[in-house]
Length: 88
Image (cartoon, rainbow, N blue to C red):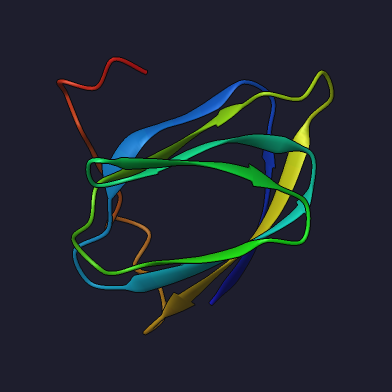
């Protein structure tokens, strides 16, 4: 399944238990977290998130950030588990 995501400030840390996610940053810039690693990312970059991995994003751009998220297999709408201890 495909989703166009617009981020104003941040995407809280969460994980998907049943799907891998591939994200293409279409516009903007920010800090992306997967597991214990963080990455400075900008438009045009692509990153892969294996199912079960905790991940989140902080928009570092003054404008909104846009991304295309592709889930394999198809995302179950109930398969977004928020991390309660997240500082974001």
